[in-house]
Length: 469
Image (tube, rainbow, N blue to C red):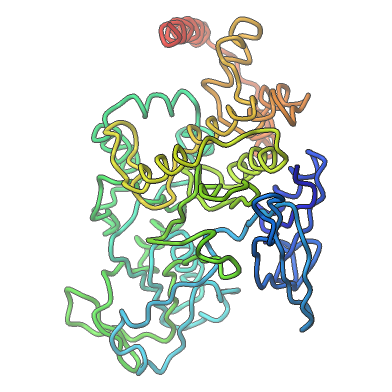
């Protein structure tokens, strides 16, 4: 049974892992190389190596060697949780930009960006239209003389605000919506989502529409970008053809654009330099891990990777749910299947065969948020049991099924059950709009609206009954 657990990294996944270890009576020690939170108990401590002890096949223990203030220390742990994530090493592909070495202006990776003041009265080029690149371009446009946002493949830009002013994720991420999406053929789901997104912003008119539209591309959440484009503060441009001393040339145009600063929002790579490749090997942007967590070939399941996944949903509850299950495996309460079963599933996932239903999660590390979390919750007997709930607490069951799939649902039952979860679920919309209702207006309900709500409620009951048959 694991008792002392080494946790590498004190970001959101590391903090969740510490909490889960404490909940299960384990003794976590967290190592963080930076000097702030993220970072936790042992600040500015670099993990040099994590290696199996000589008696690993019996004890499952690991030797963790760390460096702090130029002093090296070694300690033995019963288990290790690696929580360094996938945003560890800035990816700066300078070789892909001819002439960059001749550029006389300033250039840097988006990770180095801190404040927009550096862009004042400058001509700025941001390369990469992910969330970071788009945010930087929008911020820069308030101070810069001109901003160009260069994208090779385009992207889907969505607003944080859904219909009627509701938060986008609280409407999109429901069990009902997820079931509906996964029941429809992929082309239909993709078409419906593109249609909905284009209702807010016609991406073709703004030069944003992705070249590849059959596979899921990470959404860019930015409410300001369309306004900055239409007012001429941000110009969307294709990929870079050549960089010159004080300008750049884009593909499909012969015009040179004067540029003072280039920001490379070109993403990240990840690695585990403190682990031997025989433990975890990174290939093609992913690692061979069972359920994105456990190496399948270890004689003892005492090492877990937390947070190495890209769910279509919040990363924080995903990492916490991973940690809840992983800690119980490390503790010996839950068991993993035989290595052959785990390896077979890992290989099947690496093949990326489309299911032809629901969204296409074909990129490395992508996963369906609700489906994946429910699977992990099943292993610890914490998945909400909707059918029995419908019989004992129908109001809660309907709210869980049709309402936002918030993390409160993951604490309704099982280990780590929270007594306040039900009330939190039933009142989440009240808290959502409490801060926005600075001026309350009394509304008189119309008879037609009341009838429509009653009819809708009865229709939903029939739908649930048919689904559960």
